[in-house]
Image 1 (tube, rainbow, N blue to C red):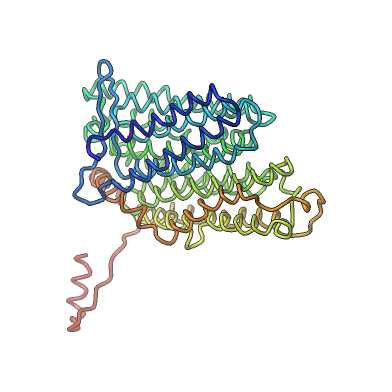
Image 2: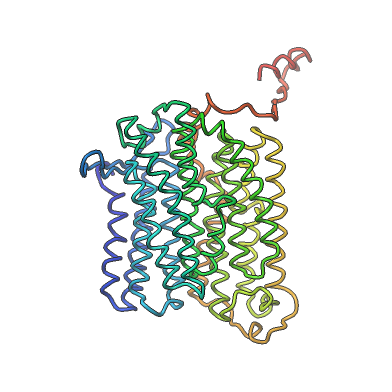
Length: 517
C-alpha cells in the first residue's frame, strides 16, 4: 500500500457523503450516511491489516505530504496509537448513524452531514502530522458537535451547546499561542520533529500549562468537567455516543502526542498537579454519580471518573501506565457508547431519562437486560471485559510511581461498582410499578444490530487484549524512552524475587542475584 493515500481517502469519503446529504431527501440522506461510514469502516480495517506491527518498522506509516502555503502543509501519517483511535472512530460511526435512523425526523440531511463532517475532523486529528493542521482539525471538531447539541438536543440545548463551545474554546486559545512560539523556536511545524526537539526547561512549564488548559477541558478533568454532564443530557443519543466514544479521547491523545514527548521535564515536575486533580475526580465524580436521578447524567459522571484513570496512567511515566491509559480510552469508548445507546433505547420508548420511571425491565425486556448487564459489568471493570485490562495496567503503572495515588484511584473501581450496579438494579430489577414501562417491547432487530458488534468488541478486548496492544507497543516504548531521563523516582520500590535455579543456588547467591535486579 506504499504511496496509496489511504488516510486522505478516509477523510474524502465522509466529506463527499456530507455534501451529498445536504442535497438529498431524508431517507436518501440516511442511506448515504450509512454507506459512507461503512466504506470508512472497511478502509479502517484495511489500514489495521496493512499496519506494520514489527518492532523494527518505521514509527510513522502511511505518510502523505503536500505543502499548502508557507510552513502550513497537508501532512498526514499514523503510528500505532493513532491507528487504534482511528479504528475506534470508524467502528462507532455506522452505529451512530443506525441509532439516529428513527430518532431524528427533522432536518435529517443536515444532521447526517454534521455527523459525517465530524468523522472527517476526528480522523484528521488522529492523522495530522503538521501542528497547525492538528489545531484546525482539533478546533473545527467543535462546530458539528455544537450544531448537533444545539439543533437536535433536548429542552436546554442552547445553554448546553454554548457551555460546551465556550469551555472548550477558551483553553484552545492558549494552546494556539504556545504552538506559534514552538514553531518559531524549533523552526518546523512537523509534529515528529517537534516531539524530538528539546525545549528549554523554563519554557516547558509555560508550554505545558498552555496545552494542559486545552486538553484538560477536552478530557474533561475535574474541575473543568461541568460542561460534560450538560452536553450529554441534552445531546441526542448518537451525539452522546460519539462525544463519549471519541471526542473525550482527543484530550488523552493530545497528552500522549504533545504534552508528554515535547515537554518531558515539565510533565514530570507538574505530575503532582495531574495526580491531585485525578484523585479528586475519581472519588468526587463517583460520589456525585451515586445520587443522580437522570441516567445520562450518571453515565456522564462515570466518564469523568474513567478519564481520571487515563490521566494517572499517562502520568505514571512507564510502559504499563501508558498502555493501560490507551486501553481504558479504547475500552471506555466502546462501553460508554454502548451505555448511552442502552439509555437511548428505553428513552425512545418512554421519552424520559428518570431512573425511577423504570423498574423490572428484565421481565418484559430480557434481551435488553442481558446486554445492559454486560455493558454495566464492563464499565465496572469485570475481568474478561475491555475495561479490566486497561484499569489494571493503569493502576499497576501508577503504583510504581506513587502508591498513594494508586490507593485513592483504586477506590474509584469500588465506587464505580456501587453506582453502576445501583443503576442496573433500579432499572432491570424490582417491582414493575409503572404500567407504561412494563408494556415496553424488547429490542428490535435494528437495536440488536447496533449493540451486538459493541458487545463482541468489548469481550474481544477483554479476552484477547494483545491484538489491541501489539500495534501500540513500540510507540509506547519510544515515548517511555523519551520520558525516562525526566521521570520522577517512584516510592513503591518494587523488587523482583530471586529465581530458583535448577541446581539449587545457595542463599547468598540468590540474594546477590535479587539485588542485581
